[in-house]
Image 1: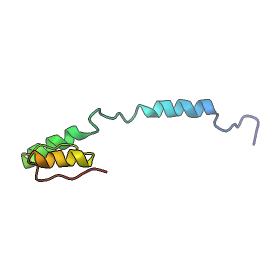
Image 2 (image 1 turned 180 degrees about the horizontal axis):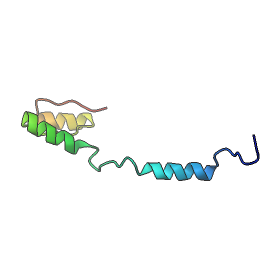
Image 3 (image 1 turned 90 degrees about the horizontal axis):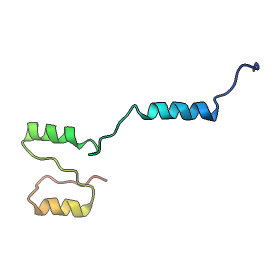
Image 4 (image 1 turned 90 degrees about the vertical axis):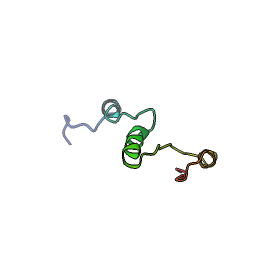
Length: 71
């Protein structure tokens, strides 16, 4: 290995990580907006994110017939 060849330094790795971190923005609703739009357009139904068993039970009590828990 010559004197001009160096492995990546911590600084350059951090700079690349910071630069690439802006490439994939996450929405505040966790990506549910496109799901809601498609569900309404295709099924004429509202899509609701259900993350826990209590939320699932509440949706069933409110009359939702298609309800599953995301784990």
